[in-house]
Amino acid sequence: MPVAVYVLGLTVFCIGTTEFMISGLLPDLARDLSVSVPSAGLLISGYALGVVVGGPVLTVATLRINRRTSLVGLLVLFVVGQTLGAVATGYGLLMVGRVVAALAQGAFFGIGSVVAVDLAGPERRGRALAVMFAGLTVANVFGVPAGTFLSQHAGWRASFWAVDALAVLALVGVLTLVPRHPGGDHPGVRAELTAFRNPRVWVALATSMLTQAAIFCCFSYLAELATDVAGFGAAAVPPLLTLFGVGCFGGSLLGGRFADRHPLPNLYLGITAMALVLALLALAAGSRTATVVLVALFGLAAFSINPALQAQVLREAGTAPTLAATGNTSAFNLGNTIGPWVGGSLIGAGLGYTAPVWAGAALAVAGLGAAAASGLLQRRAAAGPVRLPIEPADRQLPVA
Image (cartoon, rainbow, N blue to C red; front, side, top):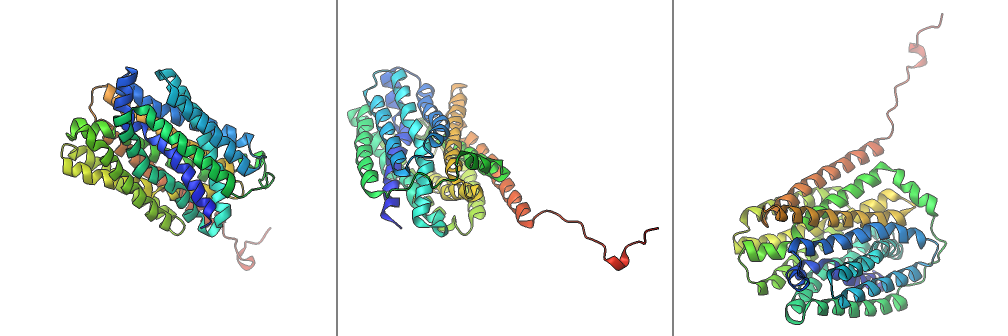
């Protein structure tokens, strides 16, 4: 695998850490900013909404710009937003910083996905995407727990500054190691939009959205589930998040291995496993031992499907993949918006911290239905149009 693909993975690690670490910072943020936990949870939804809106817009705006230049510009925008969040003294400015940083993510992931596949070759599409998006799993293994640890011992702003420093290092890596791609090697905006005429692209995007909503409906309030339901102390939250991240890392490795050869079975098995694990977690959250085991299995199931979700959209988009790949990132983050909102609404209604886990299981079942619909459409497309048989000439009725 080219070294530049690993550089993209490092950049995804920085972006993924700031996206996911808010879950571990929620208690400190809510206390410091004098807001409720569900209101602090909206910082996750606000970030995700910034990705949903900014991704397609910035991708279209940069289609004719050199791809490396686009990646550098987007990473600079991310650093600016992260800095605004680090210096924020109130909830409003922190939300602005989150949204500004989020604007860069969708386009970066979309353009970066195309660059990674170009570098690795189409026969290694799933593995290249698994390497790049392994940055998200490593973010969960190391970045999110480290951010929580820093927040508990040095304040939540220290977590933002740490990610900011890593993002600057990633910027240098992209500048020096990602090769230059000519700006005119794309099919144009009209051709990129044509990919969305394919209904299979939309079903693939719906699968991404629903599965991510399932993940974040539960994950966003995992710290509160651990402390208020399972009975863990606050010091146990970083190790528990690390365990989730280890599961994510293992799931990404498994998903990357099977995404190229068995994409749909990968989705069916992974989504089914996630729905079952979430249901068991909701039932057994009062047990510390069960919570530890099920949180690790949750990460394993949740991230085993990511390479297949990415590869599926790129495969269905054909020769116009850039905007479709960005659209998939937007679909992921639309799910990231819906999930915390659903979970927070259930908590606000007084249903407790197990309610988001049950809702996550239900959303996973809906995602499984979308994956099944995708498989049905693919089989119909492979079978081709139905043609009526033509009677042989010697068996046709004579014409009067």
